[in-house]
Image (cartoon, rainbow over all chains, first blue to last red; front, top):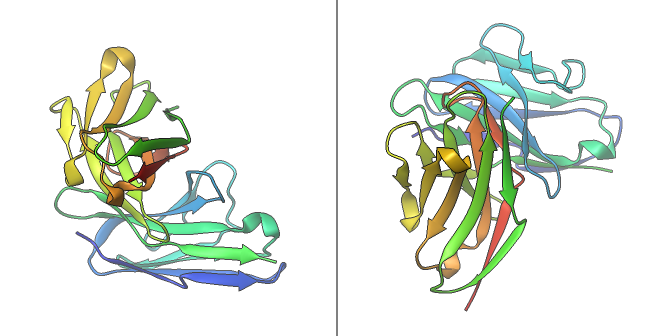
Amino acid sequence: SAVISQKPSRDICQRGTSLTIQCQVDSQVTMMFWYRQQPGQSLTLIATANQGSEATYESGFVIDKFPISRPNLTFSTLTVSNMSPEDSSIYLCSVVSATGSQEAFFGQGTRLTVV
Amino acid sequence: AQSVTQLGSHVSVSEGALVLLRCNYSSSVPPYLFWYVQYPNQGLQLLLKYTSAATLVKGINGFEAEFKKSETSFHLTKPSAHMSDAAEYFCAVSLKGGFQKLVFGTGTRLLVSP
């Protein structure tokens, strides 16, 4: 299995500011993803974090709002830019291991509140 | 496009009773299907997965699910509920037939009463 450390676990931010969330995995993984879980709702895929290249964004999500980096196989960051209250959500990092069952593992999430 | 529908945002059962959480999917290609559980303030944990092998899949904590192609369903069951089963349950389908990008249902909160 893969152990995912996500930081911060929660934050309260002022509108108009930006927050960078970190995702660190204890083993090399093939795929890393970022999901958003809005209050009372399900998970929606934001983007696939690609090592050494630009992330692949899903419909409705853009790089200017959610810039993503993945400098190596075990680390990625998601930035929520120019935040508004509508960005208040839980953001989750997910990884698929390079070996074994290829099961998708999830971090504990970052609970973001924008005021 | 693939999608998942979970019937019932909340399901309440008594401890020891049967648990049935419903999931129907839509997919233009043979899907991979998953059930995840989310405990309060925690990430998601995989309960079980269907990957076109046996249609009856057994998972952790006594849960199982049956893939029924004719009904496009993948309902989650457990014969006897335990208090510790109280959580949010998500059904998900893989976008590319693999363990990668997932499309999630809206979730079902399971409440277990003594």
